Each structure stands twice: as C-alpha cells, then as structure tokens.
Length: 80
Image 1: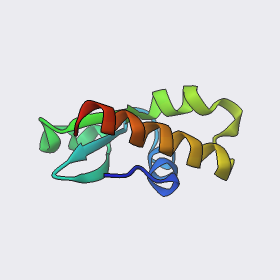
Image 2: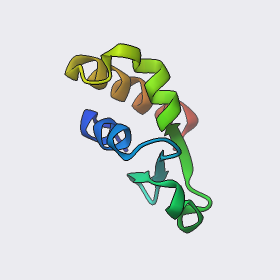
Image 3: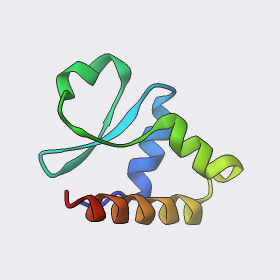
C-alpha cells in the first residue's frame, strides 16, 4: 500500500472534489461522481488537501514524491 507520485499526479489532474482512497489494498483515485461506489474506503487525501500541501510545487516531481512518501507513512501509522 504505497502512494506514488503517479497517484498524486492522477489525483491533481482529476480536479476538485476527487479523493485518493485506500480500498482492498489498492490506492485509487475516486472522482466525486463515483464516491458512493467506494463507501467505506479509507480516504488518504483529497484533491484540495494535496493542492494545499504542494502549493506552487504541484508539478515538481520531487515534491510529488515527497508527499507520496508522507502519505504512505501516514497510511502505515494508521495500520492500514
């Protein structure tokens, strides 16, 4: 269960209201219109949260990798 920079890029490209979730051992990008299909999944981060964390560095590969590592650590600490 590792969040990758590619996961964060996909999240950011999906737009506001989209969430990065952990479901069935997989990290998924879930747009608002599909949220009901993933009820019960653990929300890792929202589009808004990641934009706030990255600020102007949203396109910087290193910043994306760092945030992916932070989110992976947060998942691990939750015991997921």
